[in-house]
Length: 157
Ligand code: S3P
Image (cartoon, rainbow, N blue to C red):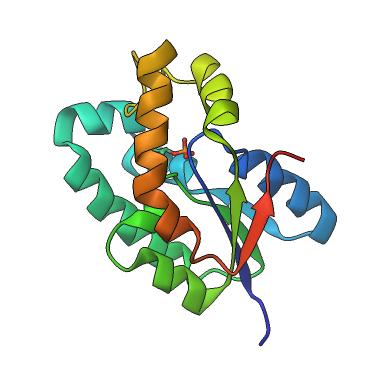
């Protein structure tokens, strides 16, 4: 099978964009961050979008964009943390490219998200035990989707 695109999946703060940019340099493909693409397309921040239209509307719009980018070639796509977990998005990605799950522990994610949570509506305002507990529960809910990726990479190393 010829690989035409790479999808990076994983929880918020797992380093999908950082790895994506590194891969862009390594393999010379384009790089696209699905969240940035969303904000450019709709001319609104994701935080504002959640506040105005709610999460369900966001998931629908996110899916449309995923279908759109699944047509692009020679591209590395950093997906939003929730993208693989709605509709048949994980299957779309597995059918159209190489999926890589960047797996990290709750502790590491909590540490990273603590300093970068305000732009992320799902964790904005949470800290300490509340943040840790939220990540633990959400990760448990999402792990089954992330684990459908073709490659599981240990993000701790
Ligand atoms: C989300 C993750 C975010 C963004 C939105 C929802 C999620 O992307 O799509 O805030 O549901 O986990 P990052 O994983 O790039 O932070």
